Length: 169
Image 1 (cartoon, helix red, strand yellow):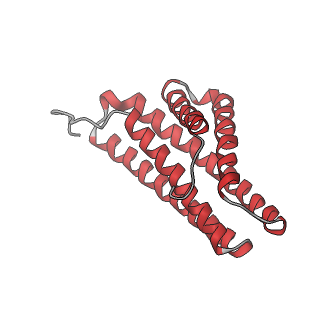
Image 2 (cartoon, helix red, strand yellow):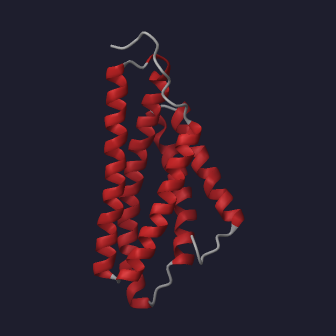
Image 3 (cartoon, rainbow, N blue to C red):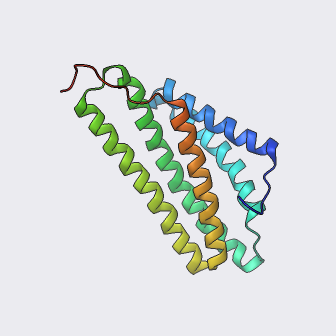
């Protein structure tokens, strides 16, 4: 993000947490939800410290912003669990995907992307109204940055849908 320097050590921690979360999503079942939530909390705490460094607020604005941010973060975490479920479904069916399964996965992926984007926009508007436009824009920039990094990490870790030779159903 231009004009803002991240601490490289902290950024590496965040990327390590993202990668760990992705690996867990591939290899563990939904029954291990507590462990996934633990990683989400660790990622959220590291992320929150970046937000604190980037978004400078005065006392009256600070409480309003953090109340809204905490609400946003709870909703973001819920969508993160959905993301992991979609990744798990993909990992479990990758070798045997047919056209119908591929279409269902794509519907899930597209819907999840839309929900994430809508969530950020919703909280941009709430922060703009409850705090101010500049803070809302900073929130939006940071969340788009993190969501893009997560999306990129996922795309780098999962195999592309391969051409299913002779299995079109």
